[in-house]
Image 1 (cartoon, rainbow, N blue to C red):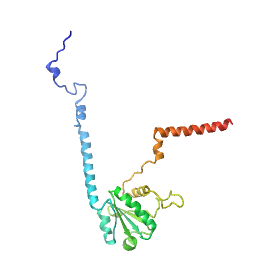
Image 2: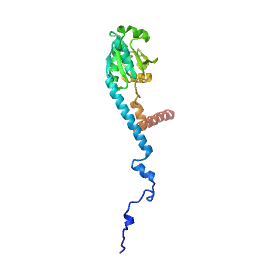
Image 3: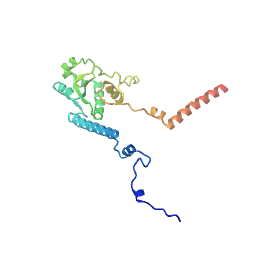
Image 4: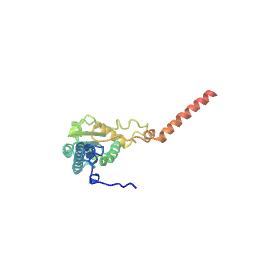
Length: 222
């Protein structure tokens, strides 16, 4: 019977280099890699800054869609890095539709201050900003009115069928406001687009192609 003995040297811990690795590998596994720690620290700082900004924005009324009067206009648009103001008329149905969609978006986009103002009661800013169509959503970045704005339903209801021009989805307005630069928004893939990248979708597409080919082959054989 063979007897194995374990010496004191065998019992001592071995270095990463002796084990076939390197000290750098050991640092990476232990989470002490300088580059990795630097990335972690940067990401943590970004998260803290974003959280602080969110708290500050909520304190300014972000997350709500509020009505302002003419005397509140400048303090409102100058207080936030990004702001939008809907110039509306209380008797216009399309203004009510715009209000409905803006009210839906406001809680989802804390990064922007959402406000509205009665155009009839704000003649100075209507003239100053050249508001000629109601509804109009004027976008402000750093307190400066942007040339790109939402005028009526232009760019929102363009794809709607006749008779359905006022029934556009809220996502259309979100896309338009993102183009203006006042909110952060990325359109999600449609169900049809998602299916193209799934196994089931690929099989269905293949079956459609096969059926089409069989139909053509059958017609030719006749």
